[in-house]
Length: 237
Image: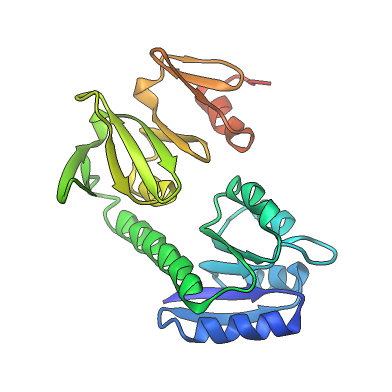
């Protein structure tokens, strides 16, 4: 069961959100909040797995609220403004829903969150028995991918492309980059961009805004710069 909160300054929208949440059997609505400050108080008193939050709110926007959290639950943004979608993905939100939201689209977003949650729980349960591989659906089969064979991974909307040392042809599978990231060992892989994960062992050079894997140059996102600095022990600015 995912413990969630709903945050929206519009009472009508908040009521509709509550009704949609009630239709998803694996969601438990802990609280409804009219603004980000109320949500902060609820999160201080409860363990929250998932936040449904509006983008534009008085005082503190949904994006500002999420960016300020030290421990980030999963987030689904719900708003009337399409133009802020890119900003929200920089914070690795699970999904971005534009009002009015149909029930089937809402459930699809919730299913993404549930998938991520289940992967995270499985990873925690197996932490003492680290795997050296995982499986993905590709070419009508479950393909075994060794962690040691991966050089980098590219996110393509609802698909990802896994580049391997053993073959020049990448593996394409239907998944989100966030879901794959949950399966990878933190000691061997780092997220450098909203669309890229790289194998630490495969990195051959680093510049201010780029990571190189031999002759392949991949961009480093602004919000992931700190990860590179921790890896190198040097400021990249």
